[in-house]
Every structure is written in C-alpha cells, then in structure tokens.
Amino acid sequence: MQLNRVAVTGISAICGLGNNLEEVWANAIAGKSGISKLEMEGSDSWPVQIGGVVRNFTVSEELMNLKDQDRFDKFIHFALHCANEAIEESGLLKAGYDPYMIGSVLGVGLGGFPFIEKTHQTYLDKGARRVSPFFVPSFIPNMATGKISMKWNFRGTNHAVSSACASAAHAIGISASEIMLGRQDAVITGGSECVIGGLTIAGFASMKALSKRNDEPTLASRPFDRDRDGFVMGDGAGILVLENLEKAKARGAKILAEVVGYGSTADAYHITSPHPEGEGTIPCMLQAIKQAGIKPSDIDYINAHGTSTPTGDIAETNAIKAVFGDHAKNLNISSTKSMTGHLLGAAGGLESVFCVKAIQEGIIPPTINLDNPSDGCDLNYTANKKVDREIKYVLNNSFGFGGTNSTTIFKKYEE
Amino acid sequence: METQEKVIKIVSEATKVDASNIKAETNFIDDLNLDSLDMVEMMMKMEEEFGVEIPEDKTEDLKTINDVTNFLKTMN
Image (cartoon, rainbow over all chains, first blue to last red):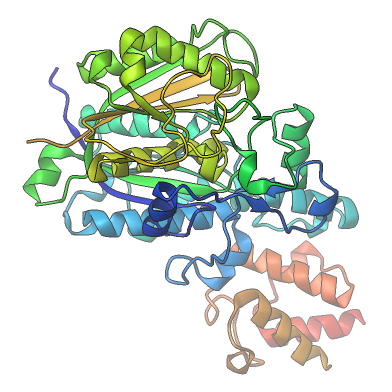
C-alpha cells in the first residue's frame, strides 16, 4: 500500500518563553530561560516554587467568549490560541477540504487539573449542590479538540491522547498516520497542558522528580549538566497543522517540513524509571528511522526528551549511543526543556515546533545551563549557544511515566 | 439592593451581558440564548447569593427575570 506523504503547513507555540511562535522561537535561539519564581496563591510555602509559566496571556474573545473563559481550564485556552495561529499560517481554511476529512488530535497529559483542585475544594466546603455543571467540560482532556472542532467546523477524527509526558508526541504520530492512510486530509495536532499548581507540584515533588533550585529559577533546568537535580514544570502548548502533502502542494500551501517517521514502544519495566538498558527507547528510535526509510547517520539533530533528571538524561544518552554508534558524536542534540521547563503532555508538541523551525531556519536551539557535562553525558548537546547547521532530518524523543516512548522524525521538504 | 436588581446583577455577571440590556421580562432562553447547563449554573448562583434552595422541579418554571424575582420573594 502506497502511503501518503505528510506535510507540516502551520505551527504555533506558547510557553514561558513567549505567547506566540515568533517570541518563543526568538527567545529559544537566544538561549533565554522561561523559568521564573511562581507567584501563585500559597506558592511561597510549596516545596518547589519555580516553573515555566505563561504570563500576560488572555485568549482573544473571538476564540473564546468571556463566559467560556471563566468556565474552561487554561489548557483549552492555549489550544485554541495556538490552533488559530497555526491554522492561519497554513491557509487550511481556504483549502476546501471536506469538514469530515479535517481532524484534531491533541496530547494532554493531565487535563484541567487546576479546575479539579478548585472544584474539589468547593465540594468539600459547600457540598455537591455547588459543583458547577461546567466542571466536567472544564477539565476533560478532549475538550481542547472539542472546542477546536466547534470553532472551525472540523468534523473529522477528534480526540485526546494521554500518555503522560509523551502525549503530544504520540498525538503527532497518530495524526500523521491518519493522513498517511488517507483517513484524513488534515489534522490539527500537538499538545496543550497547564497544570502548575499546589497539588501537582506536591505530587511530582514527592516523587523527587522536581528541581528544588528555588532561589535560582533560570538555572534550575539543566539537562545533562553535572548539577542537575530534577525537572522544572512548564505550562504551554505546541500545535501543528499536518496535511496530505500532495493536496497541500496542489492548493499552493507553503510546506514547512515533512513528517516521515514515527516510533512508539513501551519499556515494560517500571512505573517511572526508564529501562536501564534502553530496551524501550532504542527500538522506539529505530522504528521511526526505519519508517523514514533512512539510516541513523542521516539524522542531523535530536531534540532530546532531556528533562534534567539524574537518571533520565543518562539513560537517553546511552540509548542514543546504542542507536547511532559512531554517528552519535556528529549529531547536534539539545534539550529545549532547559529553557521552557517540562510541558508534560504538551512537551512533544512544543518540541516538534522547535524541530520544524530548526529545519526551516537551519538553526539548532541550545541546551542552556550546561556548564559541566555530567559523567557519561559526553555527546554534543549544543551547550548554551545556538548552532547554525543545515538540517535534513530531525528526530524528536518524548518518553513518559508508565514506561511509554514516542519518537517522531521530521524532514526538510524537497520536491 | 432590591431583589430584581440583584437578580439582574447575577445574571449579568454569569452571562457577561450588560445589565442595562437585561429587563424584567428578559427571557433566559429566547433573549439570552442560555442552554440547560447555563440555567443550572445560574440557579446555583441565585441559591448562593440569596441563601435559598431552589427545588429542581421549580426551576423549569423560571423563564424570565420576573419569574426568578417573584419566586425568590416567596422564599423570604
């Protein structure tokens, strides 16, 4: 069976680095940190008081009326905001596709946790009669795609993917597959997450997963560095418009990149620790490379999962060495989480946006705060400064709790 | 604040419709385009603000600002 080629025709992002694609990318290649001290109610007593929060953002009333702005959790606001920017760039609304052939699949790891926390408090204080009828719609992970479908009348496949920190990467892989198989002409995909709050921080902190560098927020996320002490939570979204490449070409769309490979595996090992021999992540990368029809040595850049946890960064480095052999040293690797923090379910969306920009611009965003590479972290992580490099193939890794792994490969578009 | 004024204020805040555009005869469904979930939320706010409990079988009859105002007056 001949599979359709998949084009990326629009991208958008929001995170601690900025509220639109241009700002986010400019700050990423400048090596800025989007991590800051939290200023939330009660946050000065939390064990961790830093995060990559989105600041000064209000979704436009055209995308979400004032009534809805109060009723829906922030990950839904981010999703509509970014979907709008990506759709505008793509020109998708002028394509004339059958609405049933335009889908929306987004990765959401936790969903509307802040509203769950808030409403639970109302329930305890005031009882069941005060729980809003909008409570359930406010937090369910698929409400982001639901709202997208309603806003633009996209009637194709519509669902959320939830695989913790691999959610958005899985969503992109699944969306590309829908187009490859001819089941959809276009899919809005990526991920959105906004869960920084007292309860989530307590939960991740209790696992010893978070950096406690409360006094130096901008230095806290330091993947592959000797002094890293855990990840930093981030809020935001990264959204892509994927399209059947031949149809996109026929309508004269600008093609930003191609999605050519997708791998997806499980460690089958531990709820939170990566498999020490990379028995999930190595086959995952190899699957994606195989689907792309290339050799490992064709990859130029890896946007790593690289969360800044002591075990995760080493495990990923070892897995990369196992997959790429001698070529591992020639790769540019970077973890943009050093600047954005870890967007959990949205991470793979934001990082795929970075991958597409890297291809378009020939610029690799850096891993900041990498001052002293940790023992065993001896690859080229694009430390502290962006690198100019002509890129043909980029590989993006996203791994999640539950031992779930996802790899996607993007390619520079050539006729 | 008079009961009606207070009702209008609550409805205005919940619907984001300017209070000057909400009158005694304003109908929640026909004029303000509210759906069943909106109605539940609004009645909840009335209960909270007025410290009353509106029986579920009663809410169906409350179609206008006037209906709600009159009903609340009977509760006090």
